[in-house]
Image 1 (cartoon, rainbow, N blue to C red):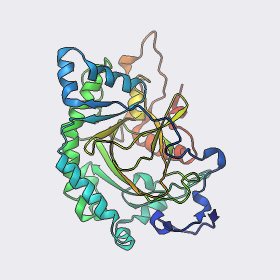
Image 2: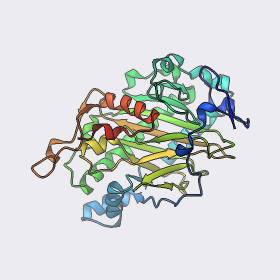
Image 3: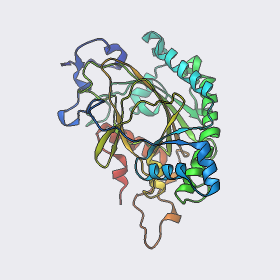
Image 4: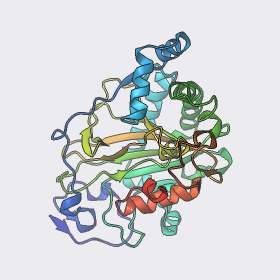
Length: 358
C-alpha cells in the first residue's frame, strides 16, 4: 500500500484520490491508530460558562464540580455560553471552508517555503504541511494546515494571511479572549484553589496567540496513517472549534485511548489544558495527550487557537505551590524553547513534558 516518496513539500491534497500511500506517511505497525468507532467514547463534560459563573458566586454547584473533575482527569472539556458571538464563529468557519475549497495553486500563494527550510514549520506562519526535518523523525501527518500568528500583532506576516481572514480572525481572537478567556481562566483558578490571576495574569495582556487551521483529507487507509501525531499542546490553554459532522480526535486517559465524538453543538468550543499550565501548577492541572485519526470518506476541519505566555518568559512550577511537603516536579524552561522542544519530541513520538521531569 506504499508508494515511493517524492522530494519537496507535498501537500496532502495532492495525494487525494490515489490508492497508494507514500512510505513516509505509513506508520510502523506498533504506532498505527485504532480507527474511529473501535474505541470507547470519551465522556467529555460540557460546561455552561454562564451558569458556572453564577454557581461560583453562590459557592458551588454542578457546573463547578464538572469543571474541577475535568481539570484533574481529562484535561479537556467543552464549553457553551462562552460569550463568543455565534455569527463570528460561523464567519470563521466560512472563511476556513472557502480557503480550503480553493484550487491548490491559489492556496500555495500563502505557503512559506523559507520557513519550512528553517526546520520548524509547525511554528511558523503560512500554508503547508509537516515536513521531515529532524533526524529520527518517523512519518508525516495526513493533514495540511494554515498557521498564523495572531498576537503580537506587529509580528504578523499579513502577506501570508488569506484576504478572507484578515478582519475575521482578528475579531474572532479579540472576542475569544474577552468573552472566553477572561471568564474561563479565573474560573479555573477559583475551582482549583489557585490565586487570583495565577493563569490569566501569566498571559500578560494579549497572549502570544497562534491560530492553526487543520484540514484532513479523506484517506483510503485510515488504519495506516495519522492525521496529527500523538502529542500534548505546548500552550497554557488551547481553544478549538471542531467539525460537528465527523469525528477523529482521540484522547489518552489512564493509558487508554478514547474517541471524542463530534460535537452536537455547532457553537461549542473544546478546551485543552496545555503543558505550560501543567508545569506552572506543578501537575495540579492535567495536559491531555491526544491525536487525530483520518476518515476514509469525509474530510475534516478544526480551528485551533493556541495561547501562550510571552515566549521569552521562563516558566516552572510556581513558587507558591512549592513547600516543605511539595517538591518541584518540573525543571524551568523558556516558553519558546519548550515550543521548539515540543516539535522535536512530537516528531520522535515522545512526550516533551517527560524531558522536564525532576
